[in-house]
Image (cartoon, rainbow, N blue to C red):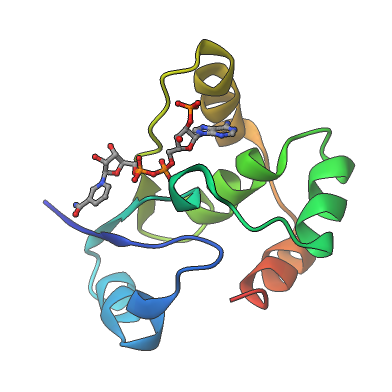
Length: 107
Ligand SMILES: NC(=O)c1ccc[n+]([C@@H]2O[C@H](COP(=O)([O-])OP(=O)(O)OC[C@H]3O[C@@H](n4cnc5c(N)ncnc54)[C@H](OP(=O)(O)O)[C@@H]3O)[C@@H](O)[C@H]2O)c1
C-alpha cells in the first residue's frame, strides 16, 4: 500500500538514492516518517521567512512541503494538543511553486 521511509526538509537520503523518485514515477504512495526530525527541526532563515508569510510555524511548513509533493503523505507524531491542531491545519497551507523550490534547495 505504501513505502514508509524517512523524509523531511533535512533528511533527503531516499531522494538521493532514487527511492522516492521511483515511487513517484510508478504511482507508489510514499509515507514520510519523522517529518519534523523527531522535534529537532533545523530552522533556517528561508523556512522562517516562508512560515511568517503564511502566519504558520516552521513545523507546519515542513509538513505542508511534504504533502504538497506528488504521492507523498506523512505521519507526524505529537502528544501535545496544540501541536496536533497545528499539524492538522498544516494540510490547508498551500505553498507557491517558488516556496516549494526554495524549500527543496534546503536539502
Ligand atoms: N517506519 C519506521 O521505521 C519509523 C521510524 C521512526 C518513526 N516512525 C513513525 O513516524 C511517526 C513520526 O515520527 P517521529 O515521532 O520519529 O518524528 P516526528 O513526527 O518528526 O517528530 C515528533 C516530535 O515532534 C514534536 N512535534 C510534533 N508536532 C509539532 C509541532 N507542530 N511543533 C513543534 N513540535 C512538534 C513532538 O513533540 P510533542 O509531542 O511535544 O508535540 C515530537 O517530539 C511516528 O508515528 C513513528 O512511529 C516510523
